[in-house]
Image (cartoon, rainbow, N blue to C red; front, top):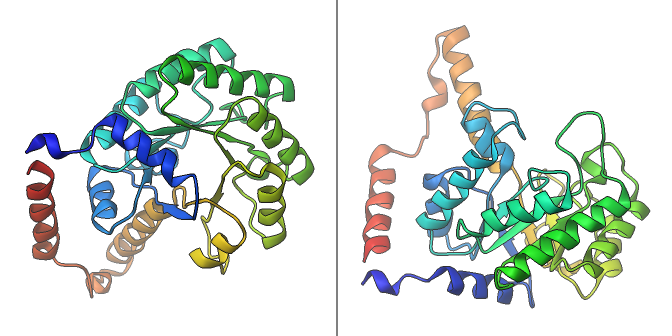
Length: 283
């Protein structure tokens, strides 16, 4: 029966439980097909990728409208039975009250969690002022609480991917965000064992998300042993797909060769997966 599918509230409860103990990978699909395939692989939760979806739609990361992004969240949340975390960028606003209003709209899409960055969506200012950043987190927290408090709220310190790689400042921000009501903390761009363990220890007992977007040499078990609760991959899976597409298309355009098609997953294999997945989804 259709009623056997988990409700939005069920998925939000599941997402909270995932953050209570252990370590889990939350991969980042960029469309319904990739989301459903990741769900089929047995992942316990998913996260959107602003860059992956933007590039698939012909935009630079951060150039999509709030309405388009919310529609994307709504589509992915409805298409999957596991929790979905929204990469909500900077909340699509600078002012705390506007962030709160947009968070309320984000919650209405059916996501189980959302993250808000402390960097404005421009190329001139790497980070919001500390006090404004904390006020924005507090406003997002209040909006979530007004909506029932079920959504997992992740606050991000963007230092290391915005050209301000200062670990002390990132930790200062993360600790303040935790005190302001964030459920999970995230400093994308840190990549060494020392950095990861320092962040985990600094914000304990709050859970930490680690962005493993490159070949850093760590396994899931390695990262779990550092105390990380959640591992995401950002836009890397989407870039894997785009990289393969560009490489093969370029070979065809420049060399007239089709060697890149060797070893591809077949159309019948994909048809089989999605046909069976669709049956399970509608059962």
